Image 1 (cartoon, rainbow, N blue to C red):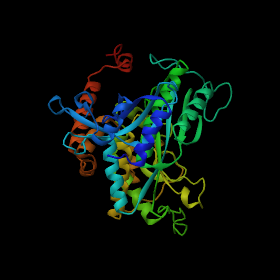
Image 2: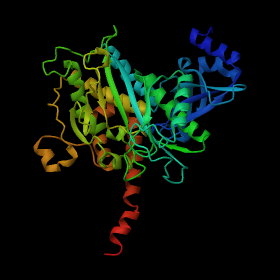
Image 3: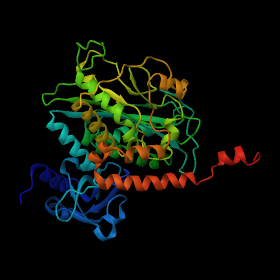
Image 4: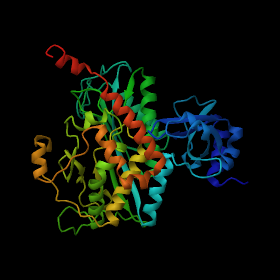
Length: 447
């Protein structure tokens, strides 16, 4: 079979760049990167027939009895890894996972996102995504000793990691991933690199690459990078704020309406999409915030978005409408602030998009925006009086809401839903049985 142009480009580049190993990348259901290496002589066969591997070793894939999986590389994602040697080089491609009979595997997160993207296309929309991922640098992986005492936007000797961020950005750009911003974040030794918007599947691939590159460059400098949602109790957590919009096939942003009577420049489509995010966020919080530690960030202040509301400048609301360029149609977007940096980007983008599309299909109406008041200063009773609900306060609550969600089962399928409920409930119950240092210090001497 004659390879298509993209496959032909990959095969020629392998020869010209002295590539000796091609890593096939994919993720487990929790969003951890998985990989195996293929030698160049197997690449033509890999494109046509895929490469088999044992899926029983991957969390959320299959049992030992049904473990045979086949990975089909996506030639459009081919990149030579710039942190590896240029001679005997190493490249990578993201993969689609199928079963031996040629069916798409239900546990393939990337395919789940592609399915929702295809549904959006059937409605005439293309989703654009621009995430802001935060992370910390620590001396090593044994504790939380920071490298600097810098704060938001610092560019002084306080910002020890300027060179780490610089090398990270340059490495990403060498891999075809454009970066819009990079800066020191609010916490000591906390940083943020914002990727330039792209379509949802390409951006999810970019997020996975980004997280690996951050860690690889940190290792090069002899330090450790962590995307843990809340590594330190008295410091800000690390989020993945997701900017998103829908475009039509002519390149018009369907979220923008300069004649919006409310003055927010949001179209009726945007408002229904926003309403969908707010309505279904509690049900997909298990996806956007999947660890016990995730809820330490959500409930820990520092402008974290626990509240099911939207605003322009209020960062305690779940959804924000950025207004940096209010008259520029292409810049009109919604920012979902609840996801954390440890989330699986494929499933996160899939659930957000599905919730927004459901809002459009059902013609949901967005609530009135809130003002600048800090919602964390309001009691639960005061929030209830104003009709403002919150996200789940703990992993256990998130599991229950997810398990009851018809939309999540429709989007993710029985396989992924069942795995997540079983795995996360086991994590939650193990946590409940653990006695923390906080408890012994608070209760041991008085009880």
